[in-house]
Amino acid sequence: MEAFFDFLGGYWWLAFPLMGVVAPLGSWWSKNQKERHERRLEVMRTKAELAQARPADPRQLAEDEAAGRQRRVARLLEAHDDVARRWLDYELDPAKLIAFPAMSDGRDPRTAAFLRAKRVADGLRPSSADERIDAETYAEYRDAVHDAEVAFDVAEQEARRVRDSGFTEAERQRLARAQQLLSVALDQSATAAERQSAYRRVRDELDGLIVLSDDAVAHLKHRIAGELSP
Image (cartoon, rainbow, N blue to C red; front, side, top):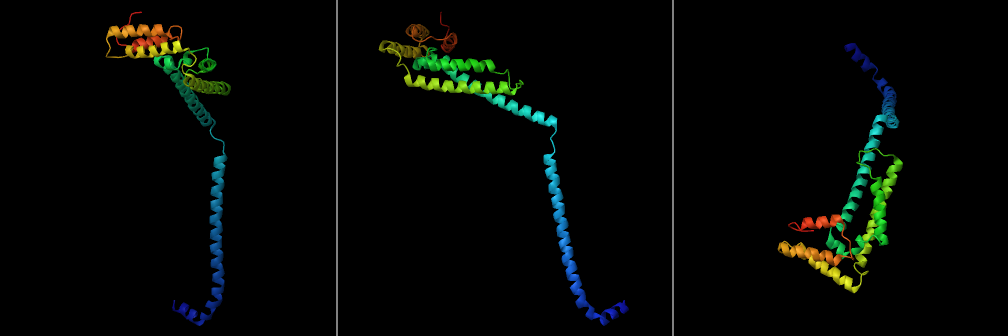
């Protein structure tokens, strides 16, 4: 070891040229490490891109497609049910029909258009969201539901606009009396006899003006406490 230090002491002047060699070597080493790191990153990026481009499992693709189709059909069924509920709000409520009689008049072109659109949608309706339907059938049902929604909006807006303007003054007076009598028929504080009499008079006032469906009559009877005689 002492001989080594003696050697260094005798050749100390070699340190300066060696520094000129070591410095470039350090720079080269740092650059080499940086390039290797960049190459590793590039390899990792390439592998990730290949993994994304690799075809997915056909079974998984089929399951995803079926789930997406099921969600779309479920949304259509909800929209279909919603327009049916809006229609039943008129069909089963005599008070609404008296206030907006055009909604029960199949001769009105807008109401007739809705009823036709509803029949088409009802005919195309699948039994449930789980039922498998092809793309063409789905498109037909989607368009039919949309047509029914639009047709109902148009019919409702027109019915609310015209109200009872299509009736004569005498007929409008009959509708007004029917509305008042209906309030008595549904009044819990009225006696059974009063409610029964009011119900019969409602039917008489509406005779020839508005046709109550069997469902509307049954619904009205259900709302009136006590059994009403035919």
